Image (cartoon, one colour):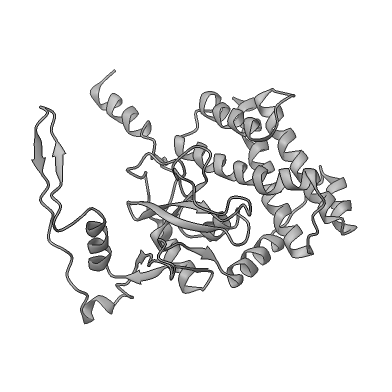
Length: 326
């Protein structure tokens, strides 16, 4: 194999590789993130960020863990009344993480769909990053191939914004997170307006396929709790069919499906992590609660939940169809 082909394979094998079909806003191309994270974002723009946050229950808070390539990895907490605190290890497999692009965070904050973001200029954003590393007192070094260490020389800080920087918009386009009043590290959360918006958006795009007539009957009869239970069963059955395990269930089945995507369909790691999060949250916050107890749902919430489940089911069926064609 030529060096060029080896290089190309190495690039696509990077854990943060998105592929050539992953587009940014304004028609830009984003090939990947220089990070090996437990979660990755959908393409920026298009409202995905609010939908991603809405995978979690109301009241969930998200605190920043890492910030790379204008994208932030958050840890989720306060979604379980029995364990409202943050995970001891926010990067642990059992913890929940979510990644959001800077530009999406700024849009959500500007629309008052989330709270907790403070817009800052690049200079202040960079200063905050350096202060977290112990700058200016702490000296940073990088280890060379020969085992010796070389001091890292920080580049000059970006300039303070001037009048010209406002000609094409605001230079305050970087997200910062100020500590809460109780002194804990700042976090973001979806506002009441954000929940109203995302619930309406999901409800409006609900399309029940003809293959699920019983689900339509449940919705028309306003039996929303039964409908939630039914869509949970359909998603779980869809996963069983694609992995070929009639006895699989719950989070273990999610793991089998993600492994199947990687080994049989050769999906990129970023795709695996995106679907892993979507399925983990669906089983944690939809499938399991509605399978074991009766939960009263208002119609907008029920329709939004149906859209979430049906879009997951559609993706699962699409993966299976692609596998059969192959």
